[in-house]
Image 1 (cartoon, helix red, strand yellow):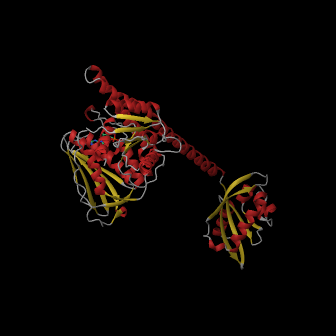
Image 2 (cartoon, rainbow, N blue to C red):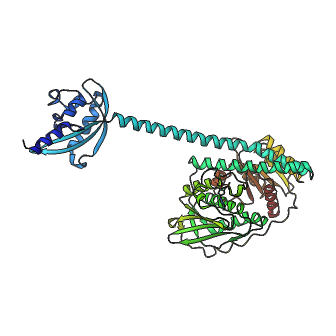
Image 3 (cartoon, protein in one colour):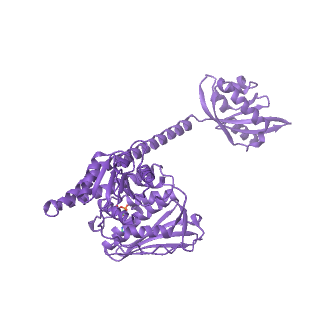
Length: 510
Ligand code: ADP
């Protein structure tokens, strides 16, 4: 034997894999040393035996089919491709998971298959442990998200009651020390409401419970809505809000995109003391850029990467603004769900630009020529003077009593009930200027929207309505079409927003 042949033979015999060759009749015609060691049979006990001797009995049929199929067409698989993880059996009956690679060959027109077999017990155990750990982590994460969602949802009812009672007490104590204490309490309540909303949003997004819708969204409309929402805030802080006209139209989820921009705009207002906030829309290369630029305090460069983390707040000059550090974590999650990316550039003392980058594939060709027409600034709201009769449907007793007290103190005539069915009874003798205020989640089978629909249908009157819900994003995504003369408020309802909604609806009521 020459040297090369000797080396080859040695390699073959002591290769790290057990090597077995079988013929067309599935008889073993070669085994190497490693195979002898692995299966603990002397070579003489294996040669000429059916391959099944190495396989647990319960798997014989399956295995025979497998081999027959392979023998029938052995070339349809790449040589050396691992075809399966099987269970093998040693002479002492002990079974082990085996990784097997097959490779067919011919000698004198006869078919053979060489199999390289390896005991994969260890990697098997590791991957099983990994799968288990992964499942456990997923389970824990889902449990955390569920807990957060439930907790923040259930905390809303008492918080709503506290907020309404606080507003009522403020009204009853026009000035003096107690009034100042109540005003402080009111700020704390606002902070807590923001925290709850943030927690609920982030847990819902992280748990994957949100499936984005694909809708046609005209940026001009969205910007007009954002302008009405933010104009009063910017005006109150002495800032100007500039909204660029645009014709861009996107295929995306309207509610989520709005939430994204609201968070970014909210920050721009919060962290800007003078100057302006600009909402722009640019098309660059193959992307659409929705940009919020402010002239505010800016973010130090080394902090930019961290501001998307939950609860992270840059604390320039030890100054903290009303916030809980969840806004940008929500932005990050919403952008992920929608397939956008976010870019922030900033200069301390000069301002910040946040860009939402939308891939060109989500852009829709510009067809509407009138897209620019309704971006005019909305009229500032008229001071509240109308006193419609209010019909309140709220199933939580605490919230209902507090709401009645608050609205009564504001000078409204209020009637209330705890069940969907009460609405018609309360409206049996309508004055004509009624407004419905309904909780979204009512008795098991009814929502606030059912109440509105039912009342409008039965009375043949377009009664305006306010719907309050602790889970507004879900309510808004459930809506198939807009409901006329209807306003949606997130719970815990902000009392001034509630009064503004009532005024708006009362003045729009035909
Ligand atoms: P917060 O509730 O504190 O606003 P965010 O997650 O929205 O939480 O933002 C994280 C931090 O990033 C903020 O605390 C603030 O320090 C910084 N930041 C965000 N937006 C701006 C901005 N437009 N200008 C300056 N700083 C900002």
